[in-house]
Image (cartoon, rainbow, N blue to C red; front, side, top):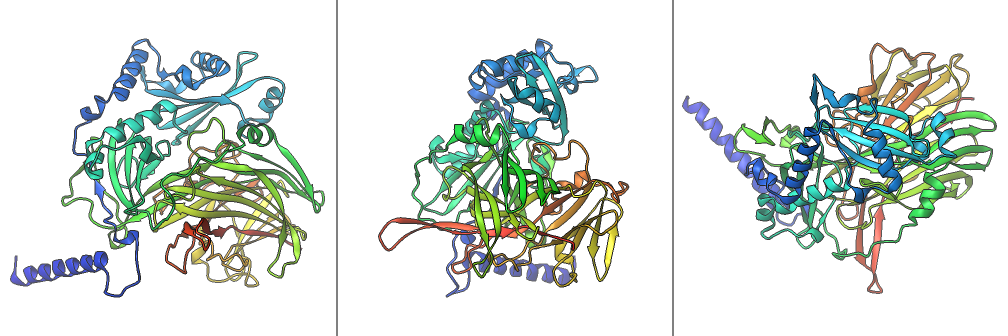
Length: 619
């Protein structure tokens, strides 16, 4: 090595050290920061898998699994404490059903499967024929997960006639976990030596949250949901930081731990659980559709198991508009900084992996959030009260229509690592409509990227065409996507896309949000996808779609085919905004906090971010 090279390396090292010192220490007199000064770092597992195998809950689970396999079965059933009598009957029926068990054997070998959930069926997961049966019969829905193929199988069972009505397989998708697996994840996090070492004390169950929420970390088997992973989180509100214990339930080990900042909060460490009107919501909005007629609009709506509030069969002045519109997921990615390891050799969960870093050494980790019905669900942000219909006003306080809205909250919102989302559908008197997603914070940190995944199945024509404006209207002939941020021109300074009937005389312009809707938005920066309608691609409740943290993919890519023609077909529009939160004083966005008001009481302040496109009739 020459002296010149040695000197160059020395200068580079000194520069990096100086940059690091500046990052963590900041300039004198700089604005106050909170979690940006928290040491963002990853803790890799330091103990063998046997450490976790010796945990009683894990040991008992493995014993039961071995017994099931030795008996010639492949599916570990749900324990009786997770089932009512009808659910137990449904499980018994399914464990003998050849179609449901079709993927449990490969080359003569039994594959590890777990039954995850069995509960009364809700209308959003039923086909038309099943809906007819289940109006008069007692029906249950069940989900099992195949650990080897990373696939979920969903079934609908008529327990009155002891008959399986339908079975669907969802490759590369993962269900909500069972209560037993939640307890196992908690046990692994509570007994992990790495977690105790980082917390400097024996972790307590009461300090832990999010144990049943699926999590991911780039560079690990949990990336892109390759393994079934969840992320129990220990929050320290005094130090404004949280330790994420990412548990790999496929390997039954700690995959990694991760420190992250929470941001300042005066929220007490304990907030009493709010009282959810669970039975009322289930009976009125989950188990059946609700009809609404107002201002020349007709539609039905319902709360789904995991896709939030869905509107269906939408008409304006007798003309069909939408078959369905909903928000199927919220992808939540947190941005970290710093080095993962001093060497390039990293072994996690028994596999050599590489941590994927972007610009400036950043890496990402986070959650996939689902919204859904309040009962029988283990991994959703829950509905607060029921859907509401409210009047819609413009910026001049003039009434211009109405909107349908549903508030979803984690039970301890606005504490850190709790989330609140609003699903909203706006209907204007001129026939326009807007699909809106609202994030009201607070999340797990100040450097988050949120991506709600919207799905809209238009219905104004059986044969539809799609266009993008780039100086003139250009028709899309095959399935594809487009990143709004790259757009250079808009038709009439408004519209970027349009969807029409075959004659191009009837349809809708699509106006992306660029901050022009007077809702304090900073724009959508969305990726739009257009696909040909196919069964199994979101017309029923959709399981978690894609990765929370891979910003190069939104999950919808799995449905794209460059060879699939779309002109003159029934089209589905997917719209995925990208939002970056902000916790700086005076600049808050996608944020919530609690302060002491002038009367000495706690006051919750929200700084929502609002995204979503507007659809305007072509006249």
